[in-house]
Structure formats: C-alpha cells, structure tokens
Image (cartoon, rainbow, N blue to C red; front, side):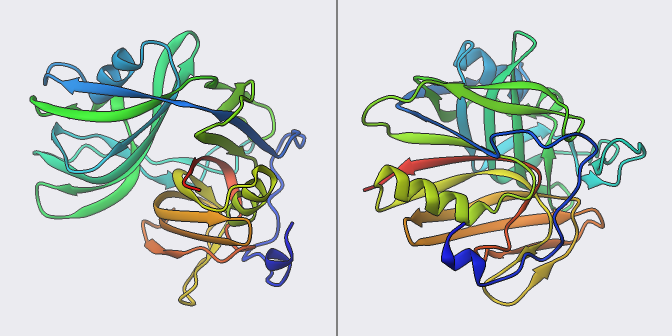
Length: 284
C-alpha cells in the first residue's frame, strides 16, 4: 500500500466473506489490443452480438448512446442466503425503449461460451435514469448501430466459481508480453482500487494510464467529501486516470437502497466488496 493510501482509513472495516482468502489479491495480465467491430442488426440481444464478434476472445466494450428496443437489468441487493454477503434484485423490465448513456462490458468465457459482465447508466422511456447490472441476454439493441471494442491479444477473462465469495467471477489469465498496450486487473475483496492502479503504473514504469472498468465497493469516500457507506453496491468507472503517484478515478455507484453516488475516489477509500474488473490503457 502506498503512503498516500495509508493516510486515510477505509470507509468500512474489511469484509469477511464466507470462504477462505484467495491469493493473489490483485491479478494483473499485460496484453496488446485488437480492435473488434460489433454490428447490431436488431435480431440478436446485445450479449449475443458482442460475443459473436469476439469469437471466443476476451476483452472489453464501452457503450455510449446505445439505443435499445428492450432493456433488462438488476441492481445490488442483500443476499437471502447466509453463504453470500450480497446478491441482486429481481430483474427490472421497464416498458418501452431505452438508451444506454454510458456503459462498460468485460467480455470473457463461461463454461465454454462467451458472456459479458456489464454495468451502465441508462435513460428509460419514462425519462427515469438508472444505474445497474445489464442483463445482456435480454437486452435488444435497435438495428443499424455499431459498437467498437477491443480484444486481448494475450489475456483472457474466465468466469469461474469463487470459493471466497460464493459468486462466479471473472479471473484474469495469460502471459505477460513485451510492450503491452493494456493491463487487465482483477481485484479481490478489500483491495483499494486507486492504490492498485498507482502501484501497477509504478511497477510498469507507466507515467500515465487511462482507467476503465466496473465492480463493487465496500463503501466509498469521494474527493468532494461525499460518502457511500453500503458494502452492497455496484460501480462503473466514468472517467479515470492513474500514474505512479496519482489516481483520479471518477465512478458512479448504486447501493442496495437504490441511492446513487458519484465522484473521484480517495485513495484508501475505494475498497472492493466482491470484485473489480479494471483495465489500464497505457498513455505514456
């Protein structure tokens, strides 16, 4: 942990999940990137269209302005089972069209098939804005649109059972390569996101990197003084930058009460609840 992160206490005490702590707490795999074009013909749900274009590869897609004929999502909720600290609400199926204002999807594999993990902010037909976890298999985009993503050349996301949290989570695997364009990170519970990004930039000798991704937070402290206290939450990185001695990561977070928070995470107060899937894109 850096000196910057030691100066402030975490918002909440460290979480104790039902299972044993898994090592390493931060998994990082460096990779080059391959552009992926994703045409949307209006007949396939967004997850099927993305996975068809990635053709078994892992990577990420950023979604902004995507028009959807139907959109389905869930929000974080307390678990009804004693062997998990959190879970999801029932699916939210708002009527009418919707537009995804901002979103991020990790693309990976689960039991030999492609899948996405997507958080986003959307505007519904009634004008209401919501943040949640997109159910991509039930979300139908309008025809005639194109998404652009990037596949990892030497890294992969695999969704596997996680004995620590009793979720099924993406893990990162692969072999580091010379002159990477990006590093994909999986952060385990209680790891601080700004600190992890700064530490990795310092290790790689990167002076500047763009930060994108999603996950869950065990409380959060923001630079403007606002605080999110729930350990049951989901976040989306809106705009992020990091270097060896700085991390300016703006996130939007929804908690289990449906309250939405946002701002720049304070180092030491952006600790993971269940998981975080982060990609650092080298700038200098």
